[in-house]
Image 1 (tube, helix red, strand yellow):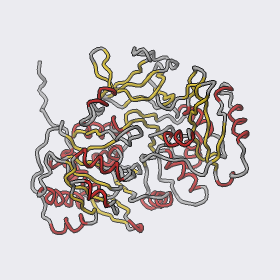
Image 2 (tube, rainbow, N blue to C red):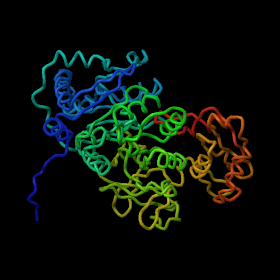
Image 3 (cartoon, rainbow, N blue to C red):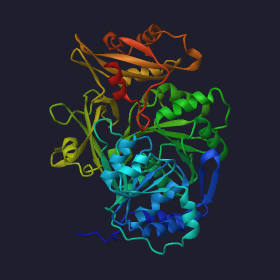
Image 4 (cartoon, helix red, strand yellow):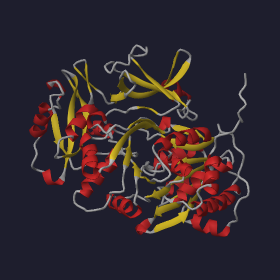
Length: 511
């Protein structure tokens, strides 16, 4: 029997309708260079989007791709709406990509136009067919253009946003998020974002659409604060204090540095209620300090480029539970598979690879049959994405990542979790950051070593033995888990998305 419900496409157009009709006076704040602040209403925003769309229509971008090499500003946000509502796909290019990677993704995606924030390498114009336009010209465009009347009709399954993985192995892989996936994912985020919130997405808008937080924020009519180009800890603290930010989003590395800055600089961040963090497990020491010193709860989220970012959340305020990735948001299913390809038990002990399917999980990589075939598995007639994360799942469905399949250390035939060791080391008061990798060993196959960044006040005062003694005092690890070496470094290499770059570290230590 058929339902009697309307067939209504879920598109970015509907989010824009809410912006124009329901939340006209809500505010957008955008930090530009030299800390210049642009402040305007949702209604002002919608008019600029309509004018920008009228300009873009001349380029016939329907069914074509428009690129952006840009940070979190109001101009970039305007492209988030103008391009997809004309039937085009906005390709957000990672500004931290090497120029050769930028060339690759621009050519692979066949970008027709590319908007950019800062100066771009000359090679991009020489080695691609795209037309390059400075973001700064958008202000002139909207002064000269008239507002578009109607946007293009699109199907909810049409592409809206394109993103490429950070490419730690081989070329970056492309994914395209549909209007429907953006809408549904944003809708589920409203369990975290409320209309009276003041939201500041620190996670870059070039990375998985800033986890769709800008879309969700405007869907519910919250004030949106955009921290601009390369925001420092001082910039973030200043915006939180002045704009009274209540909720912010970003990787743990951002908040580790932010806390370190606050220890020596006084700011009023009392408005802040929540930090949503993901990309890596948040250190317990960081979570504890935010909660006990500032009254800020840290929400641990998990996701990946292939799952449009936030897919599971852990809202527990129990410090000992925060290491878990939690449970999925609605319309996402998950389980684990063991090395024999069978579904593993949800008993909190069985280790297997996390597999996932749902409304905003990719079905394939863009024009990449080989890596698509490598990344999916079929179980009982259902297609699942293999995440590459080794996990245990408790009886109540809580996921705990043990390690990445490529990062777990196999020593003497037994597994050692680099993540568990890293978090234990970072729970030691003198430690700012730590990374653990496996290095080749003739006898054991692999052995762990740790690279540690100390807080400034502890530099030259802490020895490797102090850290090893601390790990032993926790009574959490067998002795053979302990790192063979503790190397003190000034900084740890990061990937273009802010994660600890273990590939670079493995290459360095293998030489």
